[in-house]
Image (cartoon, rainbow, N blue to C red; front, side, top):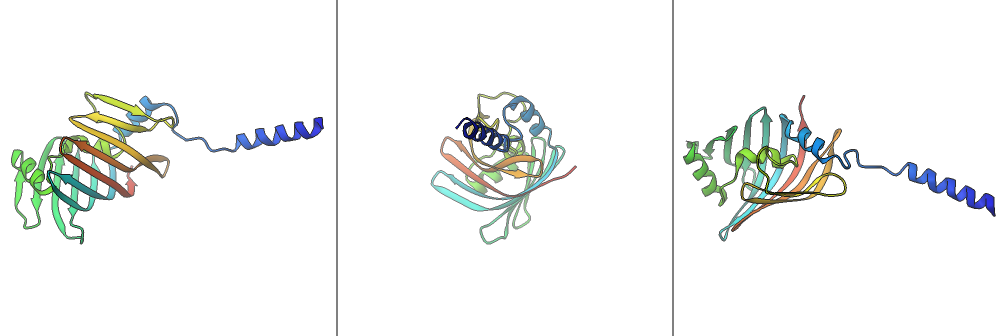
Length: 194
C-alpha cells in the first residue's frame, strides 16, 4: 500500500512538472515596457464600429515602423475605404477617391468615415496589449500577467483573448468603448520584424 501511495505521489508530481506555465505570467511592468518598445510589426485584422446609430465594418492592415504607421482600412468587400499615415500624433487620411486631409481635417475625416474619432497615437500601443506611455486612469491585468482592462484617453479597453505570435503573446480580440461608441477589433495575422 505504501509503495502504491508513493508511486501515485511520484506520478502526480511528475504530471505537475509538465503542466505548461505561461511564458509571461506575473511580471506585468516588464511585459508592459517590452510591448511599448515594439516598433516594427504588421497586423491584418477586422474592425467593427458602432457609434451614434451608425456602423462600419471591414478589414485593416496596420504597418508600424518606429513612430510611423501606415494603415489601410478596407470595406467589407475588400475595397479601400481609407488610407491613414500616422507620424506620432500627426495624421494624414486619404479616402477611396484620393482626397487627402491632414491635421485637424484628417481627424474630422476619420471620425466622419468611421462614425467616431479614434485616438490614433494610442492605438499602436493598445493593439499590442499595452497602455500608451503617459497617464493611465485604470489598468487591470489577469493572473497570467496580461492586460485585461485599460482606461486611457477617454476610452475603456477590454482584452478577452490572446494568441501566441512567435515568442510573444499578443491580443487576438479587444473592445474599445467611449461614450456613444464601441469598436471591436479581431486580429488575424501578426508579423513581428526585427
